[in-house]
Image (cartoon, rainbow, N blue to C red):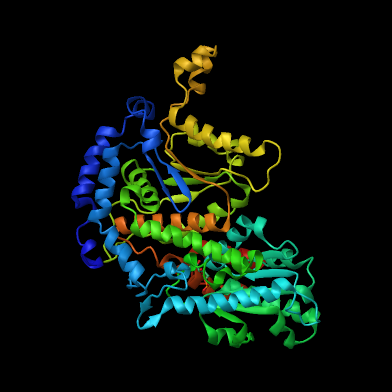
Length: 546
Ligand code: G6Q
């Protein structure tokens, strides 16, 4: 089946969708208490394993029949065919007419993937080898700054896909990082970001990685120019650039125009989307932090999940199950959001990273062939590390009126074993999933001797869904597998909705309008304004305050 025919039948007209609608009516009031009581084996059966991750999805409002129907939906929507099309390098990003080949970034050297006559895996490894050589020189102190001192600080300048992955990975893998190097990340065009990141650093020991696929992004280029002025002001002359700036980009021309020698540029390709690029050269800061070997492990984790996704039957396939459950809650139960709660302080930026991955990918309102959808697409993803979130917003998940499916992520072992912290942390993972699913009945509350007037306040209705994802320990390998898990779950959802998960036209309009407004803010003379009355008034007020 070709990719084009898979989108031909409107989603809601598909037999599996119709069957799911009926099934939903039959199951929507079933309580997890009953589902577990009637089927004591479900906690051991509704699980899946792959690439070092264990998924327990038994505390969801599903039965074996639900899963079978969802899997049938995936089949009817051509998930297997579209997955193969992606892995073969077909141009499945239709609105940009591009291949989608982040999976090639983590294929081992021994493999080859020829797309348009080019072995992309060989190209990937050429860049990885150059990155490794550079990383070794920085990490060993062999690379010297303009005044002959080794580099101690690395600042990645980038935004969106050229920032969120690197920041998240650095925070996640800090434990494995070379601790005598300082890493900072500047993304916001708000000058505060740059000022605070550099205020206590010596320019002669600082390396800037300017990360930008296009090398034209306003925020990144503004910060990069500020960084160049900052470095030259201290180091004296332009020739310092060669020792203190490297670029990660697909645009060699703009890189050299900026003044960075293309010998100090690490390339990638238009078939790597920004939000899918943390394992390309965009991950240079990650490699500097954890070393080439650690980076290889990270790629191996991604690759293991890629293989799992490509080869495991959908009913036991982790990304497929997670993607299908998101469809189940979004399109049938009307859930608007999905919470992702890592019980791991190192993963504190993981939810922010996922927000871009999921929402920029699946926040779409037309199908691949341009028809308006008549169903809900991408949910709002959000989250915070546990247990912190429990002391703020979990209240609403437990007792509010919104249905919020959540993923709880935990590890068997901590990287910082201190007293019984880890058992306390993990007991909360299990307790939250249990409390959400089973709640507390009126009878139980009464039996505790609660005053009658307070009883309703203390009742937890339960039946609130969660996935629990467990891995042995947070390693570069685990992180790769975890990111690939969500990447492919996004792909699964996008395939079912029949949308293009790899473009991002929605980001464009605001950028274009900002370009028009900049001269209106900066001009000396009072500009003639032709916006709506609100925008005109706001611009005038800002000019007066400025
Ligand atoms: C990601 C998006 C977007 C992009 C940034 C930075 O998928 O395309 O977040 O990564 O706008 O773009 P550059 O890397 O080109 O600066």
